[in-house]
Amino acid sequence: MDRYAVAGDEVADRARQQERHYQLLSALQSLVKELPSSFQQRLSYTTLSDLALALLDGTVFEIVQGLLEIQHLTEKSLYNQRLRLQNEHRVLRQTLRQKHLEAQQSCRPHNLPVLQAAQQRELELWQALEHRIREEQQAMDRKIVLELDRKVADQQSTLEKAGVAGFYVTTNPQELTLQMNLLELIRKLQQRGCQVGKAAL
Image 1: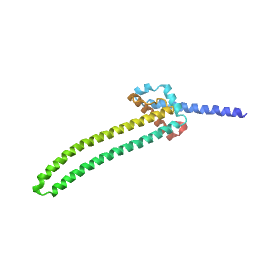
Image 2 (image 1 turned 60 degrees about the horizontal axis):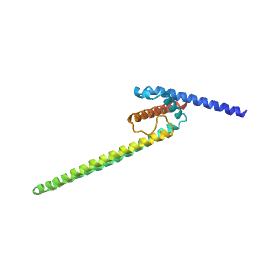
Image 3 (image 1 turned 180 degrees about the vertical axis):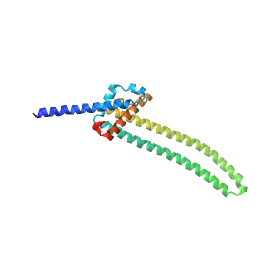
Image 4 (image 1 turned 45 degrees about the vertical axis):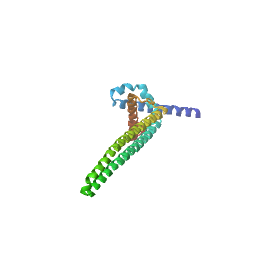
């Protein structure tokens, strides 16, 4: 008798999973209609079905949420690094201007030509420094782009390992856009699930 009860529970579980799969697939098909037609064509029934299967137990939703939080923290950190560098450069410029202004205001008229000549030489040195500052800023920007590219590759790898359809490490712009659309579909499903409960996506 116990064997029949266990078998009945397994059948009921499979039926619930099948119903959940159908609900996720149906919701995905509805959301895909909101995408540009060029991407709708690339998302076959099989891809959407595989994506729905990957979403069944909710783990992928948690992974996507975690990746999103990591991405936001990384972006904020990189933005703050860039902002700090810009502020350091701005302070240098303001300090030099202030120093020149104070020197000119406190200078006796007969020494003004000598001071102006010295300040002109200092400004010429500053122009060379400005060039170095621009190079430093460009290096920082390149570092930021590389770091963001690494994060994207990490996200792609994580989602691929989790078995999410459509995800693998790539730098192809069309594939990246498709993956971003898939992520957006997952996030929209997650938001719907939070609003109306997991059972009624």
